[in-house]
Length: 211
Image (cartoon, rainbow, N blue to C red; front, side, top):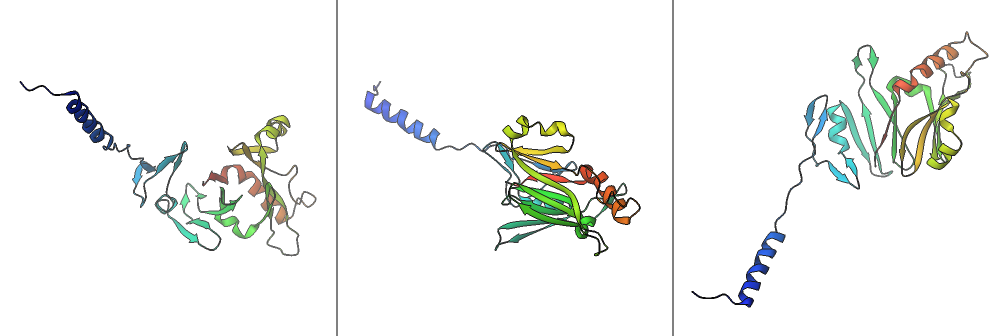
């Protein structure tokens, strides 16, 4: 029997190691499900830095929405179509805040009743009456607060702030007015409509991180 020398044995082990190292193992594909049905997207959903990233177009279109890319402003515009479900309007209009990191979506029928103003660490939403002779009033705002300040100042205990989400040490909080708009005119259509919208707000608003 011919004996294999140490050199030959080393070469065999090295070749085996190179063969194994060249093999790749595919991670299980991430499925995107909407209402129990799998959504096929043009790109694979991925997990990056502990976050699941899903292609916006496939997800939005599966919900009956439209996606448009604004190359100039680097904004993904998502608009869904209105549809009735149990008497509720599910169509939404989206507002992107804080350099396209956060998406806030409201009922589409509010589109002409809302005015948005972006400031440092807050986005203010005003109620705009149909009667142009009546001035807009504060409706709600979304504050961006550090988690340390949120806890220290006990924002959650005031009853006026609701945490929408938290990311990178920042709390995104919904603040509603301490009193209803147009309270001095309780019989006015502006008072009745704005109060009705405020009552729907927490159930109607949708909030999500988009990157």
